[in-house]
Amino acid sequence: MKTHSARIDGLGTTIFAEMSALALRTGSVNLGQGFPDTDGPDSVVDAAVHALRHGRNQYAPGTGVPELREAVAAHQKRWYGLDLDPETEVAASTGATEGIAAALLGLVDPGDEILVLEPYYDSYTAVIQMAGAVRSPVTLRAPDFRLPLDELRAAVTPRTTAILLNSPHNPTGAVLRRDELDAIAAVALENDLVVISDEVYEHLTFGVEHIPIATLPGMAGRTLTISSGGKTFSFTGWKVGWATGPAPLVQAMLGAKQFMTYTSGAPLQPAIAEALALGDDYFDAFRARMQSQRDQLCEGLDAIGFDVFVPDGTYFATTDIRPLGFDDGLEFCLGLPERVGVAAIPHQVFYDDKEAGRPLVRWAFCKKPEVIDEAVHRLGGLRR
Image 1 (cartoon, rainbow, N blue to C red):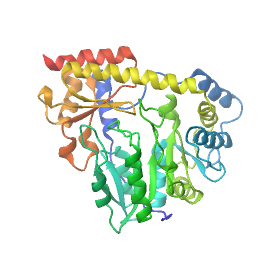
Image 2: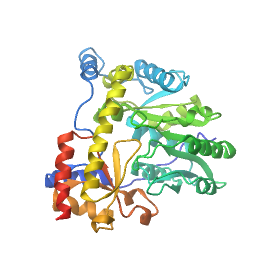
Image 3: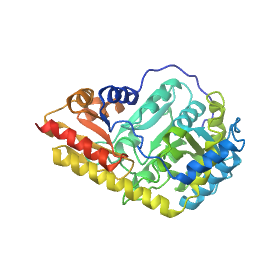
Image 4: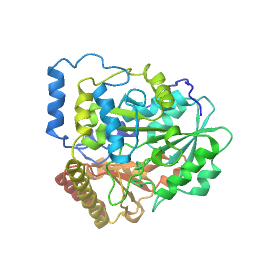
């Protein structure tokens, strides 16, 4: 397993920025970018205010404040039975996006091939390009978005050094099953691959279990797990994330991160530490609320005539737009704000195989019920 650094190149604007700007300009209901329209628990806000008012406003350690690292280690033990040393096997990042970027830049060399589940969050491809590496997509296809195990095995070459994993999976909402994770683990072990596992939606699964790949036999020593407080606690603007795993992998990530932000969010890190210790009642209520909003949106989209793929996790639902007479998701989404006043995200920007994603559109349901109702009402105009 490699632990080297890599070079960085420049790239352009994300689809999320483009669609959010379009939504703002047209006064559209924004079901595109995945941020909730309600804040997280008051107790966590109070903890941040306390930190702000009591001298926690200077640089935090590059690895994160001790309270956060200890809370992350306790969280991994509480939910998954993973034992971590908070001094050497946990490190903070500026959100999960930076953690993933630093992990790739710290662990991947130019020319290395990285297995990625397609469709993929757009920052993955950007950072793989920054690292000078090559992405090797393994496509999850509608309607069930299951992992094609034979294609996974066939994608490995002598130049493959890592797997970039995401479960619960954005944008499809699929949650990898135990048999799929077993197959990924077998590939990693047989080929001595590092796994970088993006698990930011770990507490957003509906009726299925999230299984961290680090819990599988032989995988704890070769997996760097990335998560954050943004999605779980509805504080996406705080950008408090973390990486956990064996010390050499965490150190490789820190080797790149120290030249990115180095540190951030000093008064917010202890607040997220308190959030991680919240009782089961918080996590149960959060999941139930999101499931209710998922059902509300999916039922509304189905009634309009979309072919809806109900997700097992995340806070995104996917639809096929062809039953309504459209066949290109990018054109559909670019025209949707002007047509009916709703913004969404086209799947095809997350694919190398553009045809696989062309008719698919992602919708966020992390919105107030009245906002979802308004969006569905406006989308009803597509039938007229």
